[in-house]
Structures are given as C-alpha cells and as structure tokens.
Image 1 (cartoon, rainbow, N blue to C red):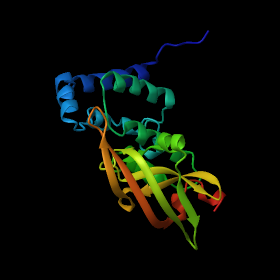
Image 2: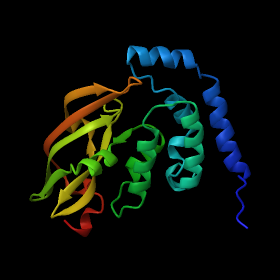
Image 3: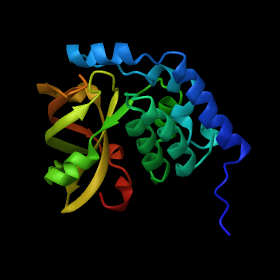
Length: 214
C-alpha cells in the first residue's frame, strides 16, 4: 500500500509556514488592498525569512535539497492564506537552472538566499505562442521581442523567458534591467502585470543548455 502520511520534516515545513503566515494574516487588510487595487505580496516576507525560497535547491548551494512534493506542501499553505509574491516563479526557475548543463550555480545560490529574485510568465508565452526571437551573433546572442502580463517585474532582478533559436524553443535568463516596461495592468486583487520589451545583445551562456545548440 502507498503511504500517504507526511514525515516529520514535511510536517515541520507545513506547520512552520502556517504559523509564520497566521501571525500576519489579516483578511480585512487583504480586502482593503483589493479595493485599492494595490499589490501587497502577503506572505512573501515570511517565505524568505524561513528560507523556503531554497526548498528544492541542492544543499551544496545553500538550500534544503527537497523535492517538488515538499514544494507542493508549502503551496498548499501558501494558497490557503491567499499569499502573493514570486515564490512559485522563483522556485520553478531554480528547478530549471539546476538541470542545466550551464554553470548557473552563483545565480541559484543568489535566488536561494533571496539576494536575487526571478520572475517569469512561461505559461503565458506558451498559451500565446509568443517567444522571444534569439539570433546567434559572433560571441553573443541578439534577443528581441515582447512579453505580456509578467508579474513582479519591479521586484525581479532576473526574468526567465522562452525564446526561439534555430526553430528550437529554449529557456533564457535575462537581467530585468535589459527590458523596457511599455504597459501595465492590474489583476482583481491589485497585482501589477507588466508588458515588457527587449532588443539587446547578451552572452550566449544566458541561454539554458546553450552549448548543446549554439
């Protein structure tokens, strides 16, 4: 039979996050915030303080070295407390970069410790079939295009995007400063979404697994 019981460390993860969020959970504040249409990022501070930004990061890079199931346990509590913040985007980006053949170790460590923040809107890019155009130049890649409805643009230091190069879709990590914000909108809860544009050259190592096809 399959054992669906949580182990001690999983119970600790869930209970510690729930306790931290309960201390600052105020539905009245969230309701007022939604009426003002201003993002609050409730719960993001607590996630960072507990170190759960590194929940699936390898222990050798300063993380917990746990798996997607453990990440899912934190999301259960995260969702039940109506939290917002780039927690999902950051964690999934770490998972992607850890599997890359490129050396993203320093960036992974910075994301784990919250020195840097990653945002992305990969699902929106796939649904809209909207990929950045990547073209190989001498020792760099030329990147141009637009991304729509990106959350947490102001908080992010890096953006994980999908781009098309040689008719192949690849992940590419781009510093936030290389984008221009051209339009903004708000969700019903007040979260800001940004339409951003890029046209610049970057080092080819920014393309995930770049040595395989560049």
